[in-house]
Image: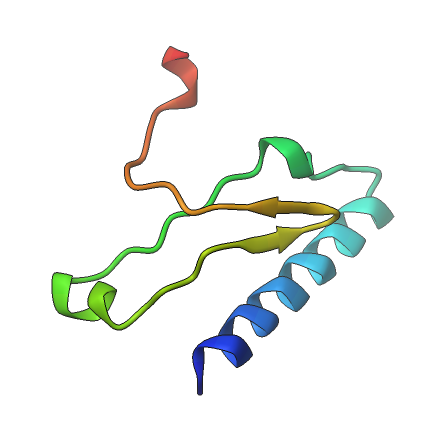
Length: 71
């Protein structure tokens, strides 16, 4: 699977999750969503995902995780 196909599959899965949540009267806050790519240095060197679409928002990957409870 190439990178474009993988990103498209992820965006489609997120769209499906949003639809499922909406049906259960829940909402995914697109603007507060974040993503991070995790892997070994060798794996990460092979990946160059600049953005991921969540709803109408284009997200850029984070380089480190954070605990939102401490913000």
